[in-house]
Picture 1 (cartoon, chains in turn cyan, brown):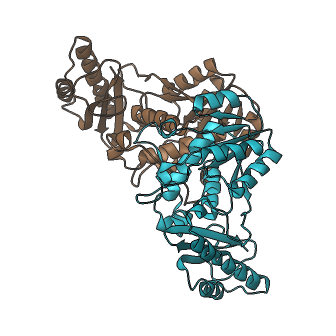
Picture 2 (cartoon, each protein chain N blue to C red; picture 1 turned 90 degrees about the vertical axis):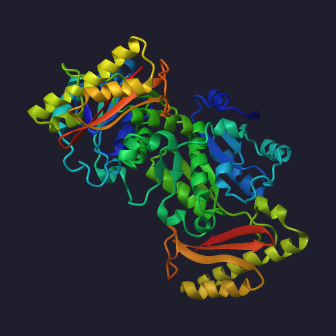
Amino acid sequence: MKVIESVKELRAELNGKSDVGFVPTMGALHRGHKALIDRAREENRTVVLSIFVNPTQFLKGEDLSKYPRTFEADREIALRSGVDYIFFPNIDEIYGSSDEVQILAPKVGGYILEGSRRPDHFNGVLQVVLKLFNIVQPHRAYFGKKDAQQLSLIQQMVDNLFIPIDIVPIDIVRDSDGLALSSRNRYLSDSERLLAGTIPKGIEEASRLVIAGERDVKTLVRRVNEIYKDLDVEYIEIVNSKFNSISEIEIGNSILLVAVKIGTTRLIDNIWF
Amino acid sequence: MKVIESVKELRAELNGKSDVGFVPTMGALHRGHKALIDRAREENRTVVLSIFVNPTQFLKGEDLSKYPRTFEADREIALRSGVDYIFFPNIDEIYGSSDEVQILAPKVGGYILEGSRRPDHFNGVLQVVLKLFNIVQPHRAYFGKKDAQQLSLIQQMVDNLFIPIDIVPIDIVRDSDGLALSSRNRYLSDSERLLAGTIPKGIEEASRLVIAGERDVKTLVRRVNEIYKDLDVEYIEIVNSKFNSISEIEIGNSILLVAVKIGTTRLIDNIWF
């Protein structure tokens, strides 16, 4: 496994490689990332993992400076998982100027839910993902379903811009109590971590109701809201796969998304119906 | 030579081709385009010409519907010039939705001169060029220096997004009286065409003055303005290659740009010093 910091060197290494799987991350790797890497390892001859805490997707006042940086631990996980290259650039390698071409997310999907709470967040995500795609030129790229809205927007960008890359969505990995793994979980105190266990409870209950035949979006949201009565809820919403509002669950094309604040830590979760 | 309308079919044809030159156009081909094709023919094993009148780069009230469409004549020129593939998609093939990922030009360069007269014009240009780049995946792409600001912005996009394509700028091709060739020249009446011959006269005079040692931007602009006294001038400006304002010519890094209205037809021209 090689750790590479420069675009030029990475391109030289990958030149002529016909089967490259790519896992873009911001580091602070956990078993959720490991699931992405494992799948990339199964499906590709060469696996590239990028670790880059992208400044343009953090808004003012967000946790850019305190976002966890754990390179040595990340390197160990990557090595044990069979990654071939870690791409670990500094900011100047990725952003050459403060006045660059920008990417704007589609209006539907880009500015609701996460997009309305974090304006320009997804524009920054799409910008860095497009840069990384062009640098690595992979055949497949792996993204977790936990960031469902991000995943949907990246798939739309790939479709709209005819980017010749297969986007592979990977299921959410959960802790023993059901909490979706996230690099931000490490911000939680013990008592907050206990409280965070309520988040998957609401999702599981909605899932049970849908399996039992409930299709009414308002009923489902109300029930999750009841379970979250002790939480600081930002949103509980059900949309279709293009992030349009719906009033009835359409099996195979509906997604329940929640965002909750536990202390100062913002956590998101979701489930597909 | 094949004419191809679908992205899928073009990709199947180009699959595995290692040396592709690409000339994106809006059709209405003239000797300026022919110079691009000739250079692409010299430098690449496979030459792809696209003909697509891109709606997103026309503003409301501009000449989208009356923009010249001369496919049969274009096909003849392409055939005689040794083009391998004409990519000739319809609008639905390129734009799948009205709510797509957008590209925003850099602030410097994107919103002055042409950008200030035609807001969002360059955003539409960059969007379609990025789509076409991803569809064709060429090794080299050819653009005329006549659209100098467009050329600069495309180069910036390629740099910012790490697009693995060489951008090859091609010199302006001029008519016998010096008028830069443009698809819009065919809008001119005989008397307007005669008047348009004044545009290169101003540029030639500025060039003579610079060669003679003049470096003061104000003096040069004033002199061109005098020559253009009978024209409806939109702008006469001198900037550096990144489109920042300058007060002194810096040889090798300065460009004089002019935009003039002849009747209802807007014409642009430029020269590098």
